[in-house]
Image (cartoon, rainbow, N blue to C red):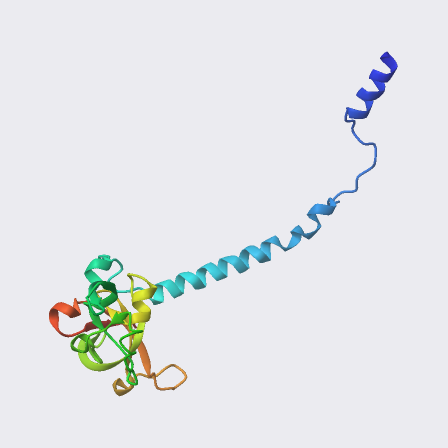
Amino acid sequence: MKKTLAMHEESTSRRKSDDNVQDGAVPAYLLDRDNTTRAKVLSNTIKQKRKEKAGKWDVPLPKVRPVAEDEMFKVVRSGKRKTKQWKRMVTKATFVGPGFTRKPPKYERFIRPTGLRFTKAHVTHPELKCTFNLEIIGVKKNPNGPMYTSLGVITKGTIIEVNVSELGLVTPAGKVVWGKYAQVTNNPENDGCINAVLLV
């Protein structure tokens, strides 16, 4: 019995191996570790580029007040007895493209009133310190959510794309800049116009 116990103890106990290990020998699972420095440098450069990009799009209004859905939309009753409540009327300023046509009433869930549609914005160039009345190309991002971006709703803090071809801005390569982003700095539904600052 003692002999079997001793055999089992021997199998579980650890001993120092007698094999001569060469200097600089690396175990199999560490063989690909020599690339770490390069990978580290690569990740650092990527981080730096991201930081630069974030700095590039540093906006004049970094924080804006979130707009509730009840404030953004008004429930429109429809149907013969006005019992259906699936339609919504947008109460904020909106942008729709030049070739926009409304859907038939049966399929139109979000109504964008003609009186609140805008095609131009007063855009201020921060370096030139002068304002231009420029055409809006599209809504890039509404901070309240992607649904408002796709609907083209323009609220305070929204990033819009404007046509700056008449300003004569040129890239380092010599090409004329056509579209540039600007951030809305006012509440368009209150003022009746869109004021924005160009992101340069």
